[in-house]
Amino acid sequence: MASSFPLTAGALGPVSNLFSIVALAEPWVAELDNGVFDHFHPDSRWTLALNAVSLVFGVLANASLLANFTGRVSYNLSQAISIGSFYFASILLLSIIGTTYRVYLSMIDRGLEVEFSQGYWSAVITAVLYFLCGLVLTSNEIGHLRGFYPASFILTSSQRSLMLQILCIIVWLAGGGGVFARIQEYSYGDAIYYCDVTILTIGLGDLHPTRDLGRAIVLPYALVGILILGLVVANFRSLVISSSREMRSLSRVDQLRRRNLKRQDSEVSNEASFHLMRKIHRSAKTRDMWTVLAVSVVLFSIFLLIGALVFAKLEGWTYFHGIYFCSLSLLTVGYGDFVPSKPGTKSFFVLWSLIAVPLMTILISSMCDTIIASVVYLTTKLGDLTLKNVSSTSTSDLSRVVLRRMTTDLESRGRYQPPSNSSAMTRTLNTNDDLDRENKEVDRELMLINAIQGILIDLHVNRNKKYSYEEWNMLAQTLDTQFHWLGSDSPIRFPVDEPALLLRLYWNSLNEHLRNRRRWES
Image (cartoon, rainbow, N blue to C red; front, side, top):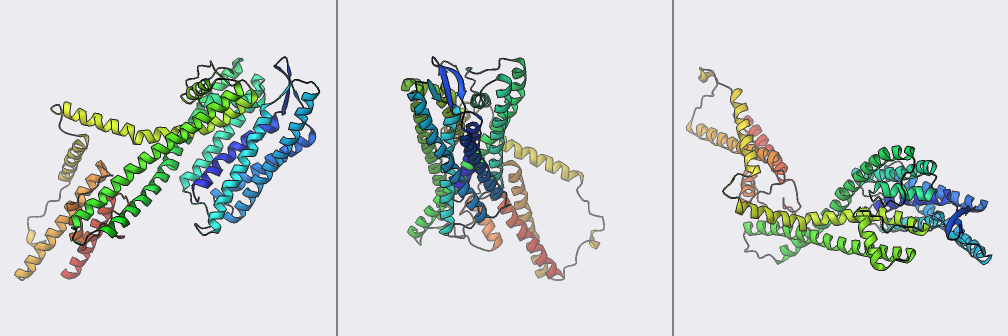
């Protein structure tokens, strides 16, 4: 509620503003001539006025939400403005939608051939999205009032940047719609549909540039739009999916740790506890990845099937043809044999495609982490078995060898050579006890330096390395402590960058040791 809900509102808010602009720019009722569009029936002044007021409140709600994301407006003030504005904008649109529907029925009674335009259906979509945004933010406020989290959105700077990127793609669509509506003489709703199909690289072909100016502009427009969309999709995957999966994994690991800690027998060895903690991490990570895959498959399938049902009903297709159209659209094949032809279908397609892209991203990401990763692992193992005699040195081992050779070569060039009269550089030891202590101190320093050198190589070669029990035990002996691997103070309780952690601990130990030795010598 502290992170996912604000992200949802921040993503749906700009999309709802886009549809609200379409609802204001395009009249809501179109008159036909033998089933073919003839002209738009002009909206009344009060309809335009209320529609404009609704757009203003929708933009105000999103501006307040964005100001909250950037920290320019306090949480409580922003929530009051955003929630109130979203609900008020939705109510205004619903009122004029109902009134326009009655006007539509009266025109049919007079024998006129009419249909609702994309402006009307965009208003319906906008009213629903505004209400959802208000509902999501209300739920977030309830969580704050119940004390689950402080008066702030629990978002990282990268997640806040994602909201700005979503706003950029919406502005790019809205601006492109205005340009192509002017050049190609499309209605604004058709121009938005054309820009959406172009940026998503679907290319259905029902709308295409017919003038050289339009062909010249669409090339840079599509290129920039695809780049912005790719940035949004990439950040959506890395921030939304990865961060939520990490939070679930941490929660799952801590639950399993506490459960095993209660069941643990006092006679269980320390090494067994270490390996049990490692097993808990692996099992939790594996379970979470497959759970995300299952959830993403279910959500994507539901979204695909519902979308196919809506398209089939609106266009008069069979349900199979609806699934065929949705599948080809998501795969960006775009044969063009089935295309949206009615205003309501085009408006719904714009919304459906903008939501389908993140869902498709979630599905592909989950498959990469599970099924594809398993296939890659199996093929790698098969390659190791079949090509075992070709090369036995892995890339990681080769990197270590090269790094060691380069380090040795560089150190040998500037290696310090002591002067011949070394007696002036050494301290005279008076007793055998001092000599033994000196040797022990030197041995300890060499051990710490060798450990740090190995960790530095790991940082360059494999930052995600997980150290063995023996390596952690050596660290514990160096620090003169004992780790409780299943306890709340376990250093591997949560997934951490172990090379960086061990380097810091060894470095602190060496620093403290040298300070103590200096005091002893003085």
